[in-house]
Length: 417
Ligand code: UDP
Image 1 (cartoon, protein in one colour):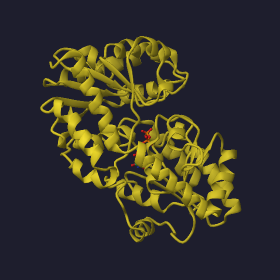
Image 2 (cartoon, protein in one colour):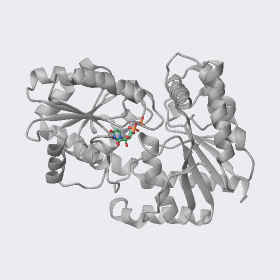
Image 3 (cartoon, rainbow, N blue to C red):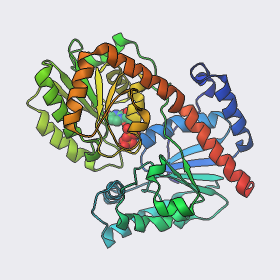
């Protein structure tokens, strides 16, 4: 079988004080017709990046609602993940295409993984391009297949898209993060669902953490908690622009001496580019003791991320391309203001006057970061408004509700398998 991620079920009732009784009742009602159904989510990695974060939060709640839900991860040798990262970059706009050998590597791994997908499911939800051809090679049985795209495909490389498209067309339902990401030929011929990702307010990354503990965690990893701090939490990926963040920090520090920067980067299991970018950053920051660079192998696990996002004066997420950018909602939930790139899902999380400032360049970001550092009252007010927006739109209970609605609609359309 594929690699089953070891998760339990987590009580949905614990969310009632946060989201209210009505939402929990709605979830129970939506789960009723799905009780006993077998649902599996499949993606490429159990750690690192927003998709694993989302599945880690959603699947235990779906289980608690009485649905037999699992999460499985595909197998892949390094050459496969080299190819899938290339596909990921191409869908976000990189111009390089795929060689015949790379296409074959992709197909061979999908064929192999399809052979390992056992059992009889009612619903199979496949996330992102890495396992997208599973349906082609394992399309037997009564399951309804859903493909969930988390990437900004609005400026996709058409050659790579044309390679993937036939596999994606075979799914019963397609789900995108924003309408802008849907390729126009799909928009006219396919029924598409739009579902925004969301954060789990009760996960170790987002649960309440008192300020004294945040400070202790940061001190323990070498940060001076009496001095100002800006932070970025992201995979080490060119689209997340960590070098842009470095440049912003250096320029703001000219105005605010003593400023520190923490870069926390997850190196995801399906992201071979991560180590290369990390190596470049190590070389770049080694002369400055006020830049702290952490990976998930050192000090960037969930509780540390929680402490950094809470304690930082400003979080920078000046991405060049972004699917949704869960880190923005994670940060705003803690009322910390964000200076974010005007791309993908970030503007949705930070409408005008909410959460912080949107920017298009390093030049624009520098005065915004400086303003937030020098005006803590305004910064806090923006952060508070950001939290309210997350509460109403980007919590995991709403995400689970959207998913249950979708599954119900599929049952209604086709009848029980
Ligand atoms: N993350 C983390 N540690 C890190 C860097 C990232 O736990 O050092 C997590 C981050 O908190 C968030 C996810 O990885 O939950 C990134 O999701 P996002 O949607 O922002 O970006 P993606 O990586 O999916 O492009």
